[in-house]
Length: 449
Image (cartoon, rainbow, N blue to C red; front, side, top):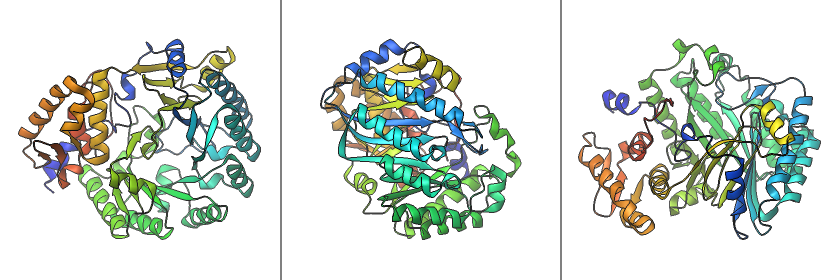
């Protein structure tokens, strides 16, 4: 592909795990607003729960998560006590007929939890909410934290899907990002989890890391494939040192350039596809039998704060510091600083720091952006059927984007706005054309490739 086109569309844009994106959340949405939103959930609504564990025993320099390093367990234990209180407060406001269809335990490093706390957290959630018998329970796993006791703790929690961070198996790259993790350790954890009955395994691989050459990345991809995970996420490293100060420890001169990043992403994706994985959106891959591949094929793939998902819940409820939630009315985010989060909970209050109340035009634009991110196209008739008159200015923008497309990235006809195969590589940049908030404020984003 022409390098000028790559450089043009690699400009920083959001990843669109929500619309509007988090930088546009404001303090106008507070505890009282959120309370009315969760009280408005219906008795038959489906709920997805997210619990954030913002602690690690080692700070990985590439990490973009809200987390902090601790070598003591007492702060983790004290934090969990507040999470339990928050669960009780929220559950008391949710109508009893709502059903939990999914739980995601993220961080940080959830595998920092001890066995008894995995069990206690699972019991707390199940005592507070009604769970569907087939609820998917996923946990983010750092293999270096895992012991036989913690595996049993995750089983007690109810894990059905394990999400394991790989990043890169090269020792040179691992040293540059402060993430030592051998292939053998990862292989053994995958084996142990499968023996324990975990139904599905996801592995995360990163491109764009310091000292990551073509050969090193391909070696990591091949080793990842050898573990036969059900899903593989191929993420581009987001270098955002203005947001995450620990990323300043990474040698920027060792980072691959834009063209090299792009070539690495294409080559890694082609290798995964050749190994039998279906392409899902712009950065996921799944075996054809996996539920995510099935959803992508039948047009029911979704996107939320965890990325691509098959979750069709009516609301996502977040617990813990910095946790983000979504209801039919809008988005919320908890206080990020763990001390301030805990202080709010101790005062008997919800810990909302900010959020966004959705308007109908926000929902229309969000629908278009999600369709592009998941399906690389949207139906014009469906947009009109869902949003009526609000669809027309969006369609005008779609027609303008197509008319001014000089790079062969857009297919536009009477029935559908979609992306060509080259256009799919730059879906984030094209989705941004429908973002009415993009460019407002001081938000900065990672590269689009």
